[in-house]
Image (cartoon, rainbow, N blue to C red; front, side):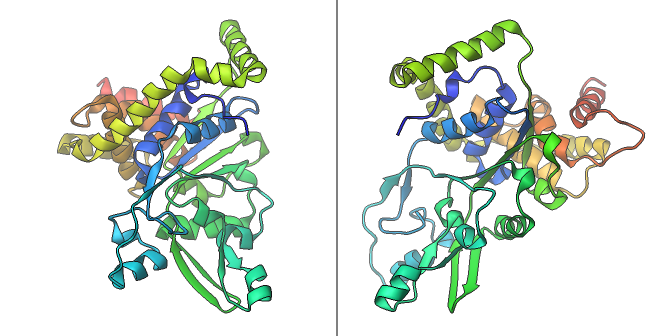
Length: 343
């Protein structure tokens, strides 16, 4: 199987790449929604991120790759192991999962179901984990998220809110952790997302087809070089990939130590009030994302620079429609930021 296109070799699309890196540093941000034209690198970036991330530690033998040393998030298998007094084996290193959720997937495939093979051959009731189980502690990717069927949207909303997947069917009663970064992509011309699902994405970015000749030529050159000699191209970008990987690892280590002063909290509330966002999820996302950006940049505290940099991606999808202002959401956010920060 050929390795994905290198993340660091993607031309431009800086906002999309930054959003994915921030979500990798702090999954509590709540996922990334990427809207744009076809052929602008949306799927490429997400699969490239998977190859870029360092492996993670998991409890040996755990079917859900639970994180060692954090019993609050254990599945039934790991909890039973702890209660029995048995010491789990040495933690194993596993790749960070990036799981595709196909538009035509059945609900059984997504949430999991009875393992029919074991039921028929051995007469045992056993659970066959679904895509949500495979995505635990990783990324769940939905291409064309705006076309996802309503019954699957409902499932995702429940799991995203609770961090658990509960399956009650065929005599089975299973509950397992399912915490993942939701990444969706789509073309706005093909329809809008349900508001409830849209609100679950922490960040929203727009990607556009490059209009500069030099940039388009560079995209073609890099893609052609990758298609002709994937291993050689990946080797060429290995050093750049290692640098980005080091940034992610360092950012995750620094995240907990980043200070969020009261001035930053007040500024976040001021921005959201100026834009008229509903609820308080906007402020929470602003603060979490700004803290992740500060960690990525090696800063000790969140300041105006971080809040201003990430406000468009954190708030553009949370704005109410204003019939008296037909400006794009991103333009409205930038206008409000200019009034607040340049006052």
